[in-house]
Amino acid sequence: MPLIDPLIAELTREAATTRKLLERVPEDRFGWSPHPKSMTLGRLASHLAETFSWIAPTFEQDVMELDGEDLKPWEAANRTELLAAFDKHLAQALAAMKGQPDSKLQSIWTMKVGGKVAFCMPRSAVVRGFFISHTIHHRGQLSVYLRLLDVPLPQIYGPTADAPEMVPEG
Image (cartoon, rainbow, N blue to C red; front, top):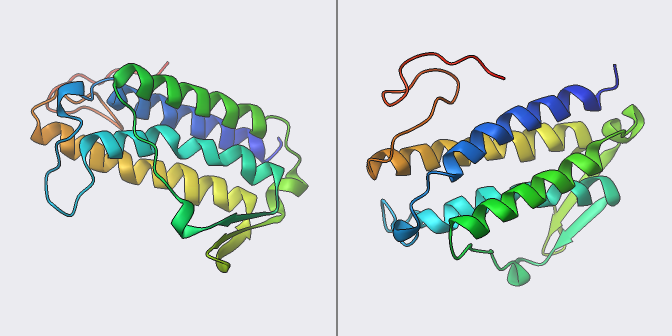
């Protein structure tokens, strides 16, 4: 089995769970934040929606150079725009990943910020660590935000107080 296949399966599974949470983000609370140092709900949800947009460039180039001053985070205006962006970026990511040879996954990818190397690692580690795990981290934050706003939470890796009956995947 090609190394890319389990990564695609994992990304697809985690993306479906992330989308369930994004579907519940209340538009009228996009500006809400649980703490002055925290992102707003709209910014956090938008970050989750755009994270997969970086996967295609990971396979298209060996080095991504970012200028910290040019990084302007995108923020959705409403839930429809949020979900459309998420779906678009996920589709692009999956298309970029499909059929990638093991040699590409094992080759080194570098991210530079402001001319300095932020990290270098095999593309397989970038997909899992920088995209999948990063998404899971922010999804955890989003689930706390939604709980604080009394929005019912779907099952993530099992039952929640709002969805106590285990529902099989698929």
